[in-house]
Length: 122
Image (cartoon, rainbow, N blue to C red):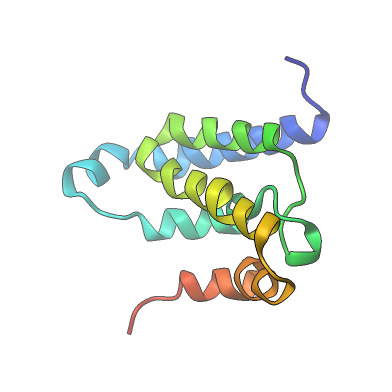
């Protein structure tokens, strides 16, 4: 498969993150049934939660091939960690982009909402 330079750079960045932040901990997270919040924050900083979301809503505005590359690299490090990324990008974001009102898109697709989702519980 021929990838664009941007797709290769994104794939390589996510691969490096997965090798450093996911692979060393995946077995422990699975055994302890823990949710790796710090890893997900890092993936959010990489833009993994908004791959196909248009830039006007704070997403990366990329295509589904790029999303597949990102998911493949994350899943190689930890399949459990890739699941929320997949669910957020595929049904959640895709449904909002297709059927959501403008107000819903602004509320639920924009980065401020994503930041609130990852704020520690008090």
